[in-house]
Length: 241
Image (tube, rainbow, N blue to C red; front, side):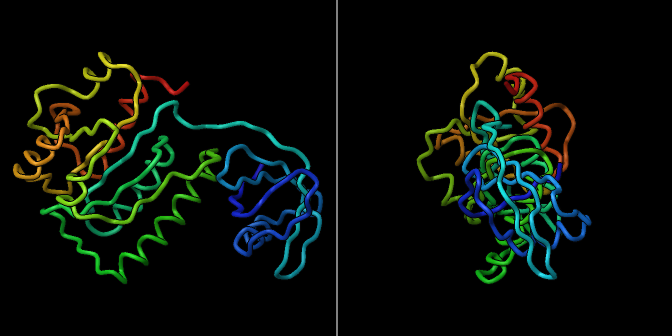
């Protein structure tokens, strides 16, 4: 059944106009009258609806039922990702949503090649938000991960964080999976460096702020791979249910 994010109040029995992009998608899929679709608004659970009217630029649907089903991890994981080159961040955001990340924090680290101006940051933010929505629709999540505004690494790491912060580095002596096996599931933040990794100064600064430095193996992973491997490792050790 096609799933769509619908940022509006939803309730059983309501007949609603679907957002323009959803209406367009319904028509692209050639769904007809009485076709069943799933709607969610990010507030939890999902609604089953049927298409009740299709016009050239307008599609309405009647909401028939509600399910409290969720697909969230039982612990919150924030991915703090240093900005990579080109379009790699698009893939990182998409896969992080699929793997259950609760929040995504883009970071400007010293070795980042990409430097976002205020205008460009706003465009990127909107673009990544769209990727989050599409990934949530595809992966069956009914809640959207929070996307934080890009922040400077030094400023961000100095902020107080109630979550355990884990910086992934090939120089670490203990592995993430080994640490996870000896600790109960808990909220945490994974720090992933850019293509050249975090500098020693940044790693030291993170350690001074209470971050734990761990590795994810003996091989050097690309920045777009490291975060996904870390999320998968945590899920494998702690479980998803």
